[in-house]
Picture 1: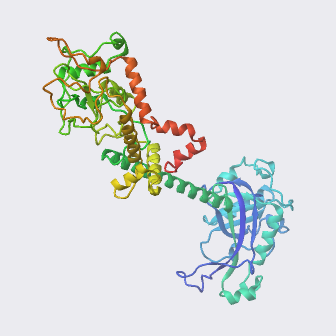
Picture 2: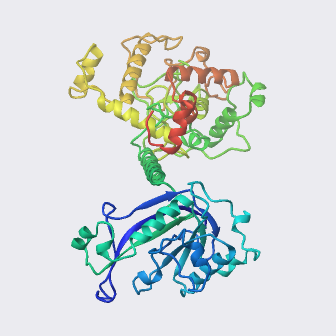
Picture 3: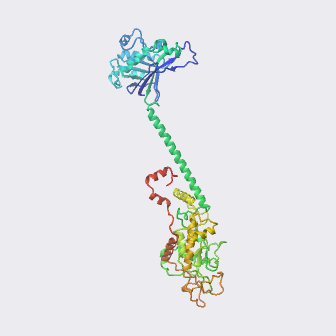
Length: 570
């Protein structure tokens, strides 16, 4: 691997002749009293044999010995100090070694390489320097002719340790230090101080560590610190996002459970607009006004078919009244409930949507067919069915839901959870003030000194108050009734009742004619008019799609933030 830096430190090595082999260990000497040198990015890698990726090349610094008869001894004398650290100056222990020598002639280089190779695998690396180079520049490229030995580069493969080249200036510093730290402890620099700190019989020698590219310490410490901090931040963000997603999922489950238990009315609180499915609408009872008994199955099927038929079929019979003959595709009548409508005195005699009076059943008339909602308010099916099916699930009068308890939308979204929490917090912060009107004083007396706290209770209170004023001004029928007259119990009458009849039914039916139900015309135009009027009665409606409405008013950066942290509020 390519070398990136070189560091030389001074170690105190125990003398194996006196120290206990089992307890002996080396110590790094403080740089204040010893040699310490570092050079970076000026090392040339000539060979990478014997070094694994990520491993450093380290060992005690020494100069290999040549044969006494070698001519290279005299050639190296000018570049290698006479007292440079040799193998004989090192402890007789299997320490790793790093050799250093000048790059002279090809013959001398081969002799130095062979001498290092003969040390039975203790040499971990070899440092060469050019004698003619006294500068600090990086040595020539690896493919330069300077590094050729005339063997085609086989010397790189024959030696099982890496070979590096260092600048001449750095090599001169290391060779001088090698000469200083080749003797006894008392003869090295600051020896008089070191003998007080260590055993005077120990060795004080230089230790080389070559950092290679790909090692764990390649990056500067600042970048390592930044990467660690970045990793911690990403881990915190990921954990926070996971926690918020889990928390929001729990909130959706809690809201779904509260809606199913009837604790929360999504539409009454203005969270999401709901509609009544046709199968639930078909389950709401139809009654003949004034009798309290459900209509016949054939008539119920006719009502359902006429209201839910396509506009093309309805336009052909726009002005026709409800047929009295049985239909071949009649569906079963809605089940009668224990809390069915039983009209009594001063109860609802008028459809609040179209303001037409209900006609009680008599010998001369079948009576008006009415739809009873779960809140016990009644309307013409022609007026209320389309409104409940297409516009809202709330009663136009009391704003109570017409959906059965336990009904919940298929999907509960994060936007619905946020809106419900916001409404709940606002409602909890509302303080009951002193009554500002006679109506509020009356409510205080009725509720034990407290005003209605919830939004639904206030809406229902205002609605009933408005309806009472409306009833005081309405025209009951073309045959007026005295103000002092009270409505009697509307059981099945034994004689025609002149009061509470429509103006177009004041004339009695001819003798022998078939009685017909008195219903408003069922055509698309009138049903749409009734639906729009019911919407106007209901007032401001909740959003059909809270997520889409919220997305239109939410900036893009907040959307991106919510995709990671969904529990953040608006």
